[in-house]
Length: 397
Ligand SMILES: *Cc1c(COP(=O)(O)O)cnc(C)c1O
View 1 (cartoon, rainbow, N blue to C red):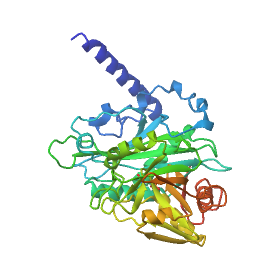
View 2: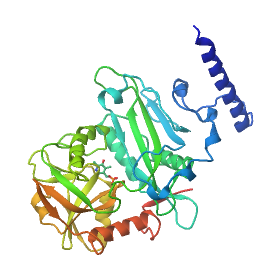
View 3: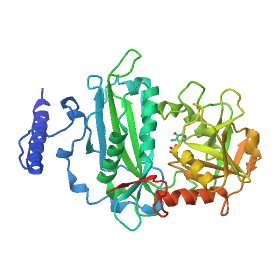
View 4: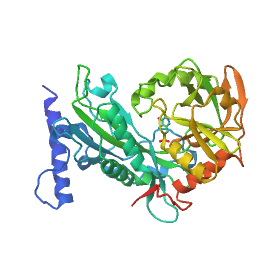
């Protein structure tokens, strides 16, 4: 047992330093409870009270804000909230240092993919302090809907939005300067409890972390090139294509890698039954434009109902376009003037070409396009450059 001494000495030091911190921070209030997390979790997270903050003054300044892509730049804090079957609901979460979490090898998420994610962005406000979120309650509700499909408890809308706000504020120094990008926020809901037989996990973890991002595609804001995939499908009727479960993505990485190796930006998926109707791209929804008419595939369970999609439909309608949510065929696509994609990560991405069965079709891009008009309209609201008459933005101070 040679390791026993150093180990216990280390834990003793940790205990000691956390006790000191509690006394310093709490003024010796005397509750003796330094953590809001249930005891059983306390060891699995990098706790705030034993954090070395000496690195905190550097970091944000070392980022090359002009060349942010969509890579993972780790930030300082994450928000964690747990829920066990005995608890019945999520109670109270808290911020902890961003870092590894401990999971049982038999956790539901690792074995059976019981998990959901969300994606959101916070922007720095123009001309005043604070940050802006875009329709965060929509993400909260989408997570609740997905949790129902995946047999998981979900945080309330207030809990969700509150957790996101805490995460933004705790990582405020990582929010890129105006016009350089956004703080991408990634909420996760996972079955973290151990389970062997196929059943819902006995415990759930809601976690929110964040990373500064710039443009999603390596093309930057330049138009992208898609390829229609007719062999691999991302969703099927009755499946989970309509909810943001983590299990929708790994099965299509292969198609995406193949497409990239051939020089395409991403894949445009078709419906699994007729192989004739457009569904969406790996992580964004698709729209086609013909004259003043804009069409996008209707969401009937196989397409992820994007919040950007929903917002663009509303903004385009306001601007006098006729917007149709309907089945969109490959022939409709080929006949279109413009094609564009929407999503939190990609925003509104113009499509330059789509390749169908080896044939490359080109579409209008650049200034004076519908996609450019809608991009400007949407981002002006999101970044606080235009008046938000719809009440879509939420301030974080
Ligand atoms: C997240 C996502 C979208 C876009 O949804 P937004 O709410 O607009 O970010 C579209 N398709 C898929 C498959 C997605 O995962």
